[in-house]
Length: 69
Image (tube, rainbow, N blue to C red; front, side, top):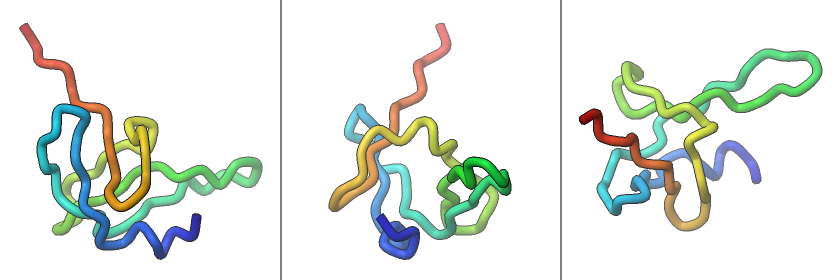
């Protein structure tokens, strides 16, 4: 998938809550892997670690954070 296809996609968590939309994609600069690090929400202050992404289709689905008890 081209990174440009992610821009503007809505992000929902696995509990069905709207999180935001993809504004930027950060790429880890690693000569071996060039892995994606995070999806950044508008404003650039909140990023979702890419390891929390569970699916990408019409929307981006991310694993919901567990509640702290």
